[in-house]
Amino acid sequence: MLPTAKGTIVDFVVKYVKGMVPKYDLPGAISFKQALQKGRRLQYVKPFMSGEDIAFLQYTGGTTGVAKGAILTHTNMVANVLQAKAAYGAKLDEGRELVVTALPLYHIFALTVNGLLFMELGATNLLITNRVTSQPLLKS
Image (cartoon, rainbow, N blue to C red; front, side):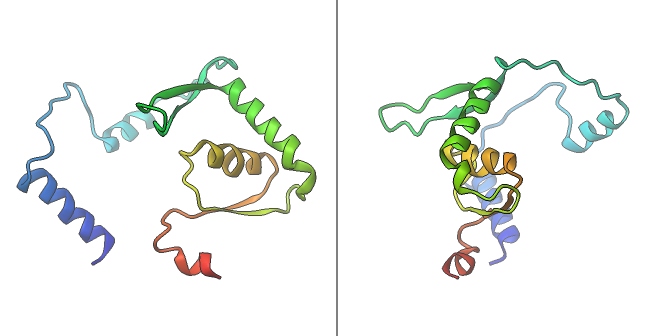
């Protein structure tokens, strides 16, 4: 079955047949399309950011208990990238690397190394968005 059709059918069954989506009301909520239209009329104002501002909420896998969100600041992420660069950078040809990112970027290793380190090094990053449909690529 086509992925889009399958998703539509699953969404319909989950919401209307099984009743698994609770009723909700979000007063003042607007659609994504409306948000884009409103945003086009606004002037961009560059936000002030410091190294101590939150960059990511990284959720743990909960292997030692309940999963928790860990706050990672911009300073944390810069330190992570510099540490990874110190460990691996000498072995890499800066600006000429091609990296295949098969791990999801919500994993801290993939985010730090595949996402941020290789961006810092000017690498080409091939992001595998669906491991199932990418099996032929991974086999070759």
